[in-house]
Image 1 (tube, rainbow, N blue to C red):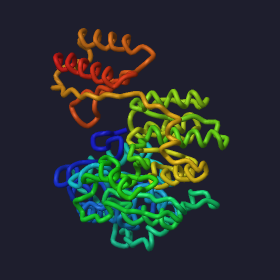
Image 2 (cartoon, rainbow, N blue to C red):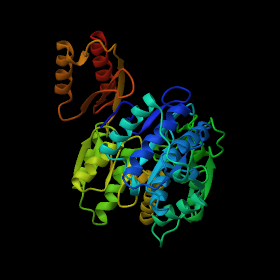
Image 3 (cartoon, rainbow, N blue to C red):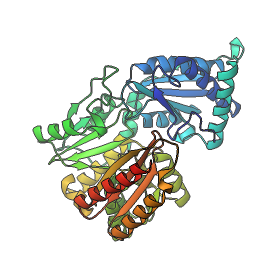
Length: 447
């Protein structure tokens, strides 16, 4: 697969700098349209989050796709998983999301879906990248006027997605009697999120639901939980739900204001699935808490780790024929309900567990005990690999011996910055911090 521009989650960058420039995005649209048209694609559905730059990038993408002879269906501001769903219900051949997920407003990105919500295959991505490089060097071709792609607005995209979400909730159940605070991160779920909960009977307190183009993810959403925690306590709510800017990540807060992260959500889903006859396992990542692994093993549920990134979680799920996987950040896959990470659908599955059990979220999460984790980053100069230094190798061996069976060490290079990321799990938080800081010092001395 070509990877000059495509990262693990499409193409991303700061708006106004390459690659997030109108000319580049138009050529990307043409490249993608040319490749997709060659395999029979006639229409691409485009959705976006609430960033101001979405209008500019959408127009550029639309122009490129049209020049390649591909029709465009514009869904407007809508969650990423809604694009995957709507692309199939509208019989579009592919979907595009314009979003930088949990990043600040000044970033944006473009992510492609094939049919039925799957990511583009490695081969398709390679071909798009090849065509893109051609276009950047030589400009784009344009089909004849009668073959140019046409654009149309999708009527009631939000309403259709709301019904889809509600359809994932047990038909005999209701959220009547539950008070829920939802933080939509001033992002793509600002309308659909509260609506889904209201229509299922909940009393809803909606916060961060007034996007202005630049307040997306700003001190709100799944990466900044203080306001949600305070709102849950203030309104004496049963729980809180936080999504990110494009609503593919979910973090929850219980009635006491305690955070329930992706690992704990995975535990709740897996335990309930096992009770309902699910015989498969769960896929986490290198960063998944050891406490989840042990809790699942205690329930007789298989567990495997993938590289960090939902793409790799999905790959391993498919390899194993399993349905449940995810990351601590709240990107959760439950393939029994959705073909991609969908914060609202996953939230409804957790709410269904709460309703069926009659127990609050605070009680349900107690089946899993998290192991303390500590993190450290070391900036590297790129001239040499400090992890190969004898003193670092020895320090790593010593640390692993100290942790033995009671903890875990993860060392990895960042995919986006010149950093080595350290994560240490140990029985006590002070130990985890001490080990992480010490190893960081040793690595830093060699970098």
